[in-house]
Image 1 (cartoon, rainbow, N blue to C red):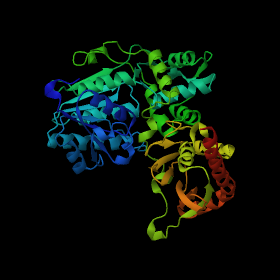
Image 2: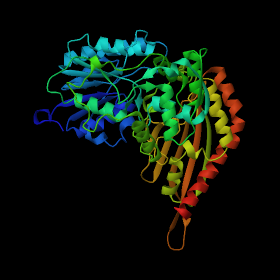
Image 3: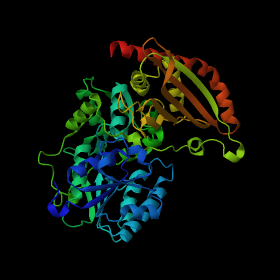
Image 4: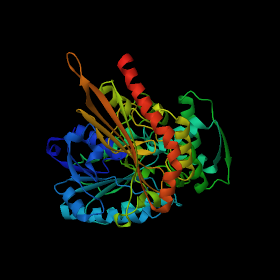
Length: 508
């Protein structure tokens, strides 16, 4: 807990809708600190369990006025912004964001900036690690002291690195890998990362410097995969190392086999080519001691992550903060002046099942549950999406029962949820590779069906609507091509949602 003179210290968390930031907020609140978060869209965090305990500043990190407004009155600011998904020029975007943040923090009177980067002690750094190091350098060029923590691979339920490790090990009993799987890494459990970050907010005096944070052991990526296989009850993996797999080829393969898209796998793989081991000379122990119970080793971190996944208690995921990066996703549909048209596939069904049971079935869609029929066609669409560089279906769901605004759901993102009252709604936005923009929406309401002898009879009406705003001729042709498949997929989906709702009435 914080000391009395820190009890009213206000801290700002940027990237609060992301993997680390979403978890850090809870840790800071537990330290007794006053927490403020900066997000572009408050809806994305509105259903997190800490939302009502924080002050929310809505704004864009590239807008200096938004930054200064968010930083006003803040003692310690956590810089957890990352533009790894901003395309090939992500390093330029990150440098510009850091420069604006440092300037705004100085004007707002911030006392301390805490930045989480990546270990960069190898002479030959990947573009990703170089950008992380440059971000820290730019932040530190201002007058506000910057405490830069550099971490290696973060192991935790829902992290991109962990999902890459998990799916490679699970799916491939025999694998051909590049030589870099023998490189040494210094992984750290997300729990220990949060320990260091949250305690940085309670330091008595501002600290400036670069510090490496690593877990309890140093090992190769290959050894990590073998540990994962053993803990998961799998046979020892056969790993054949070859010199011909370049980072680009490796990232394409990882993008196909794991939920991590190629665009994100590329910088992650690039980082693995380096020896990512913390430097003892850069230890942070004199400012923040290790946890009393000690740092978690790799096996312990893997077991913790798997236990959270099996218990459906994954708080945040790597995909929560991802943004579309491909031209077809950025461009969206035709502009209004071009006479933008939207095509609809709307279907309506009535059922005697109560609205609560219908909503349960709708909210459980996707992930391991599937899409209520025509699973083979959904699988093929996901496979095609992966093949052309999209996210595919492997992102799955965070939780099998409930959804949150802003989180990913297979190749969709949850855009809106209204789950209470007599009218309910779920709206999904497509993040698959498309020549336009697409949505899938479910609207559920109670309707009067007639008059009974003693009471009014009500039914539940389900409206299922797919909409598509094409971009150019290619988008219009795409709609015509998929229309025959819609005639099979969407009626089947609606029928099976009704059947699922009725089964819930009978069996709970």
